[in-house]
Length: 159
Image (tube, rainbow, N blue to C red; front, side, top):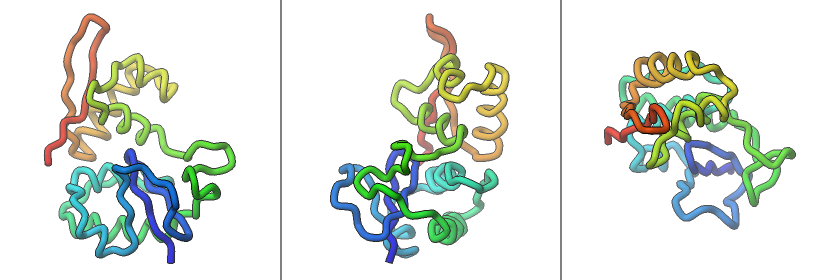
């Protein structure tokens, strides 16, 4: 029976429990495990939107998010390298939106230039993605502060 490892806003499917996993990683064996986890609806929604091949979505209830995630987890391909959760290239394939979310979840957040460098997007595309996809569509709370280095964005956990 496959198991799913949630770590740093990514999900990796394994044929069996991996021997070596990060301390803060969440191991999911069933839909019930996912339901009993401490993941908030905002975090579940962000997790959904990092999955390959899914349309961005905003869930109305935690139950709907859990059910949809569990169904999608079961369609994930198994990791080829159980020790790392990576494919042949050595890095997991994640969407650009997921990359942005990972950068913004860091304690220090991310500058506009850092996001541009990570995604290859232009500055106006980054600002549009933050405003449209992350704030409006996903309902994430994003803090924007002005520093000497420029504008810095950060996701503020709402729960």
